Amino acid sequence: MILLQTSKLTKLYSGTPILENVQFEVKKGERIAVVGRNGAGKSTLLKMIADEIDFDSGEIHKPQSVILGYFAQSSHVNSDDTIYNEMLKVFSKTLQLKKQLEELSLKMAEIDPTTEAYLKIIEQYQNMNHQFELMSGYTYEAEINNILNRFKFNEIGFDQKISNLSGGQKTRLALAKLLLQKPDILILDEPTNHLDIDTIEWLEGYLKKYSGAVVIVSHDRFFIDQIATTIYEIEYRKCTKYKGNYSDYIDQKAVAYSSLMKQYEKQQKEISKMEDFISRNIVRASTTKQAQSRRKKLEKMERIEIPKINDKSIGITFEIDRRSGNDVLKVENLSVGYDNQVITDDLNFQINRLDRVALIGPNGIGKSTILKTVAQTLPPLKGDIYYGKSLDMGYFDQEQANLNSSNTVLNEVWNCFPGRLEKDIRTLLGNFLFTGDDVFKTVNQLSGGEKVRLTLCKLMLEKNNFLLLDEPTNHLDIDSKEMLELSLEDYEGTVFFISHDRYFIDKIATRVLEVTPHGVTSYIGNYSDYTEKKQQLAEKEAALQAENSKKNDEPTITDYQKQKEQRRLEQQRKRQLEDIETKISEYEEELAYNQAELFKEEVYLDTQKSAEVQSRIEELEQLLADAMETWESLA
Image (cartoon, rainbow, N blue to C red; front, side, top):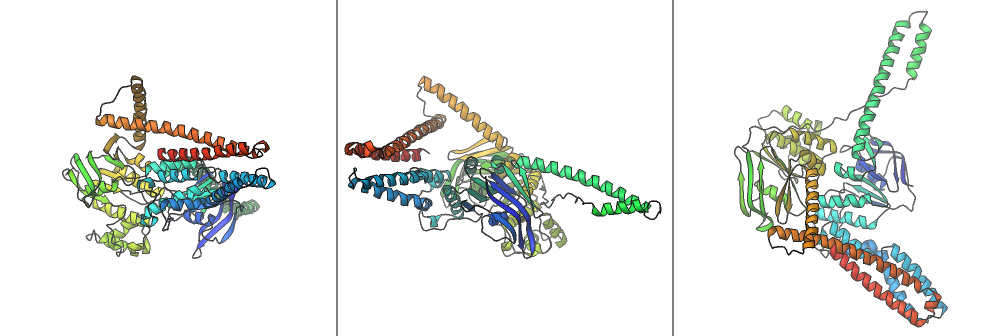
């Protein structure tokens, strides 16, 4: 079933087309990723589909019954309400219906069950209750709690005022609220921004099971690979459709390019032969007619354009001025935080030359604080940091705090490297896609992606042998990410970085450091190796628990056993969760059965039976509410 379709959609900015003749369709159950370079028009397409901006020509066809839900990169919730109350607004109609059902239930108790009026109220109650179930009447509280827990709002409390939240938290809340609304088409522009890896992985699972359609713009290749069933690429103002996920799209595009290039080369040879024949025979009386015929054929020929390769990517090469010692960094019993407020402690790890170490963990655990402390922009609260010999550190701050907002792009770089010629600086900036008058823009006029490119340009020129990178791929398009990856893979120094981009971690990392409330754990390899090792450890632990449960051994209280006990409790929690979900299902079935019983003549005409059934309904509603509360505490 087609939910939305565009025909020859065109959008102009200042008279210049950014999108031309776009053919785009969304089917129920389809998960579409829109890809392309920064500035290609991806967000513009989403805004037109979501009716956020007008288009200049073409058509968008959508049935009136189809509901769209749009999440922009800048989406956030502005409210004086609490987090939980704001989520309740999604179910305002459900809550109104709940109140009406309660009033109707009270009214039923006051009317003689043998009267026709009672029958009418029962029928009305039955219809309303069915609608109440369809509107998540018995599950909305659990749905709210589940979504808020998944987006980590349980860590700050659901009664927190929204006005007290950070910008990133307000954006996460906007996404959580939209997911609760369950529109027919979810339109998501960079939904993984501000999410940690755990939440991104949960979101992947959620979107895979989503009953409606999903349209996303994302530069997260891992994310697209996991969820997309269709890819639309925007390039040179055109929109091209590919079936499958991101990896399939890359393969199909390469095949299509190769095929088109062969067709182009074949046609060029044919054209060359025809032109040669015409030039040799047009003046000869005996062959003039043949030459004229060839000329007409050549004029009518539909020319194949030479396939374009979009090679407008950043040119980045990280070099070093000198080699560092083999021991680059050693951290012992480190505590980090702000104003003597510890964020994370008991940190112990070591980094050696040529290591490329990824620092991962949930949002708020202190990853950026660790990097700032190692970079010496924050003092350690406790413990020791030992730096190796001949070490030159370069720090990439995800907030680009080291940029002067009043500087021009040219002066921002030139001021740091005054010994270089202007033409050399401009050539370097050109490698980072700052061309022409772009170099005279002030820093505060730049987009997020432009600020990242400018910071990377400065960092490249420093020629450090130890790079500290905090979310370096934020705001970069996929092509620029790939160029950064290639540069870091060839880099002869050491890299310590934070990223939520699992594809990037997979390409770059030789080791993963996971930050937990109990310190850091080191895993050899990249992100895929890390997840595989975690899975092996979980399976091994499950086997040990099964063996120990048979022996009924009481564990000794050591650090290892404490961790083991925590994992046992987690398994127990999951079993309890399954049990309570079964109970909830049973209560809901029995509740529906008893509600149906109320409408049977032999029940509603029998005052005693009717009272017994009504009493059981009230009992089941309380049991269901208690079960839901238990489920929420376990989820």
